[in-house]
Amino acid sequence: MPKKTAFCVLIIFFASAAFSQTITITSPRSGDTWRVGETHAITWTKSGTMDDEVKVLLFQGGARVSVIADRAPNSGSCSWTIAASVVPGRYAVRVRTLDNAVLDNSDEFAIAGPASSGTSSGTSSAASPVRLLKPNGKERIVLGRLYPIAWEARPGGPPNALADLSLWREGRQIGIIAQGIALKLELFDWTAGRFQGGAAPPGDGYTVRIQVRGTNARDESDRSFAFAPEPDGDLELVRLYNDGNKVGARIRSTFPRFAGTVLYEMRRPSWVAPRTFRYHLDMLFEGPGERFYAMENVVPAPESADCTSPYEMLLDVTNLVDESNENNNRRADDLYGHPTFSIIDQIMHGDELINRNQTYRVSFGDVETYQVVIGTRREEKPWRVRMGLSYNLRNCGYNPILSGEMVVTQVGNLFPDEKPGPGAGGFLPSHRTVVIHRTEPIRLEAHGRTRHVPAGYVAFHPVPSEITVEFRWEDAGFHSDQAVYRFNIDFSDLLRRF
Image 1: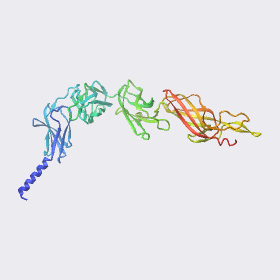
Image 2 (image 1 turned 180 degrees about the vertical axis):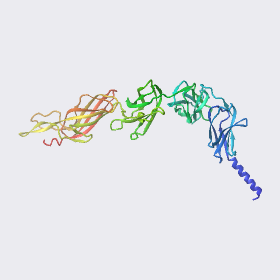
Image 3 (image 1 turned 135 degrees about the vertical axis):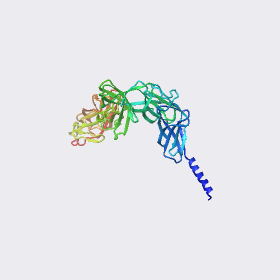
Image 4 (image 1 turned 90 degrees about the vertical axis):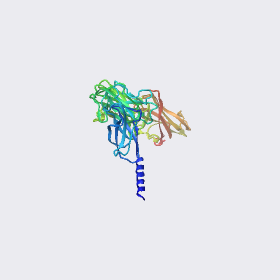
């Protein structure tokens, strides 16, 4: 190949490689106005193979003013807090590789002076996609306590927008609270006073600003608020309760005065259902003492053998509770998920347990007989077997049972209701259902308390049959239902002599 031809090919190759490498700045854009003290993201796109680091520069009228970043990762974004030394005016940003091979200049944009203290900065019209709701002025926020920063994400804003939160004092930015929060969340749990790399001192004149990334949309507290030092004290979780079908908690405060928002978690043990609930709770204590708070959690149906749903509550307040004593912050208890839920635990005959859904072979009892004349002799035949029964009952709910009744029913080939007279002949049994016993009204206290109820003597027909024991009840909330205990009964062991 001639040397001239080879030289032309090399020029074309290197020119092609250079044209395949590009950096294109996407923010700031023409028409943007950024303020001194604000933090903004300078963004760009790139193509082709190039240096992993870039230099970011600030220009005005074609002349370099300052270096924003000397060696920033070539990742497409660089955060910039505009220094107070920057004079308001028209500027441009340049992003270039360290070898100066690839670069781009942004459109001209405006840098304005810092926002005045105690006023809302940025867009404040109804069309703005964001409006700061809390803190919005005149609050007294205790340092180190959980404080929810809240805002309204209005319709019409950029989809999937991200926002940055910053802390200001008397028109100067103190620090960045959080970056890259999804605008649609509308809430950020802030440990009051904390920012990236530090914490604010007590005092007044503070505001919070929210800035929507990639836009001019922002809003700030309408008036300033104050930070107060945290007084000595602690919050303690004393115990859990039922509050109707809700979870209740008794909480003790040792602060001289406490008014604030705490975060609590409600957990159910993993062997029941691995779920965790997190909620905010506004609390007020005018002085040291205890208060009862009803939570928003609804207790589910009983899932354990003792009628209850296990719950665990954790009082999670960063820098507020004494973390060295976790028992003060955590409590577990069994709560009841129904107004009334009765259970027949056991049925006893003397000291013998009659098992549910099984056959109970009767070995003792008072046998009542009648006489049958066969020829010249009289024979005794069993008529009824009187057995002393007792019941263990429980109310697995949070309402007391005011009026309950035990009803015992026998089903099978039963004898007639009337006993034959002396010398009478035999009679034919018939298949039927008979109520053989009812108790006096029974009252059951709430919350799983067990009551032992002696039913006295029940007169059974002494034939193999099915027995149904029902506890029918009505509670203080006018709920009504029934609990059922079934078993089969066999009298053959007792009646061998007949």
